[in-house]
Image (cartoon, rainbow, N blue to C red; front, side, top):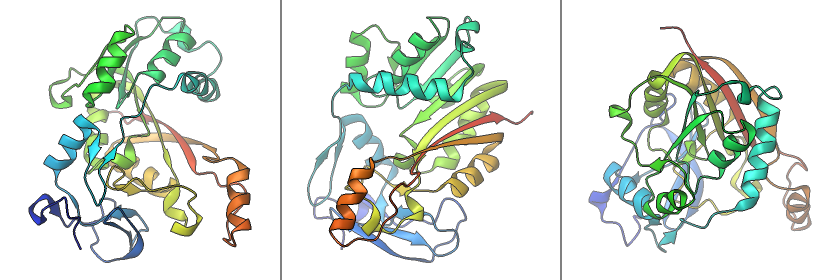
Length: 278
């Protein structure tokens, strides 16, 4: 049944964006929406899902309609800056970002700008960083701290970026392959993409210790599936760093409730990829 606050005209049935298959099996239900697992490749995705227009409006306002309306705007988290600095130090050799004066870095879905702040700190201000954020409240807050953040229409964006990042965005996209192809076109020859997302498609719903936040999240992928999408979009030299998304105590609590789950799930994936030569 469609969510009461969405008319049938605002929802549409979709195929798996990885392999194009339409056959699926139930995986979860939340907030009046259904997440299904593709029978061919294993991608988990919302189906039926909101239309592109509905998704765009929700991204701007942060409000997502279902049986309950979710306000996913949140607030700036200063702790994320240090967290992102740690990840940058793991991804890049020490001091390399500070030796790239003027290199352009575009952060897609930059939120309140915590990653942009981390980039400035780790590069000692050498990088020329800009952010694209559709949520008007987040973008305004980021600009109030002196960050260059607007909503950027990628089809009109000039190419020539040395880096593009996509952190905690992949699962919110209605068509990740389409966006990744656009990002490949924005990168200069040899330019790099940094992408972070979860690995939840390899889990059963009972083993995910969190709400799914449907329909803010539209899909849940895995390391092999993201790699497949990246390669098809024009990226190569793909490397991955893997981290637990939740502390061991969370999984211990699940086991105490009788749920079988691994103690350490590498569900936080950080991909680094280089655009293929054109």
